[in-house]
Image 1: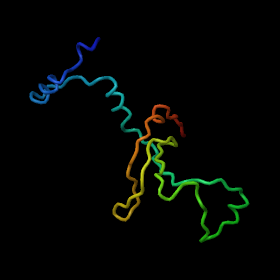
Image 2: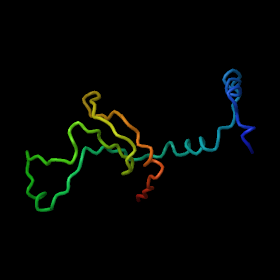
Image 3: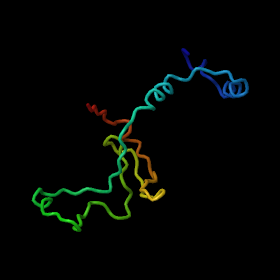
Image 4: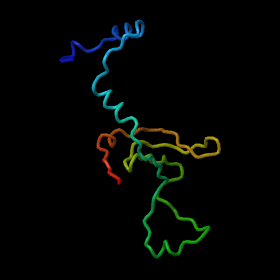
Length: 117
């Protein structure tokens, strides 16, 4: 397709659904499909704290380390270390899960690529 006049229309989609005729997908959709099977690391950050090594070495069983986040605050959902959403903890079949409450779109476009060997 050289210009938008040749782009598939809604009528084309109806014809495709009725006849089974397939139209070529846009290049952008093909690129996303290419990336869809790449595994990434999703992690949830409850909070953090900075401690001196001496304080860490003094830790023992049963001690509590206070984090920098309020108990009712949303948790950070990160993909390969980049914040992509915020959520809340849920339980699913006796396991922890995370319900996505807010998607953070401004960081997704600036995500860093990380090479691991």
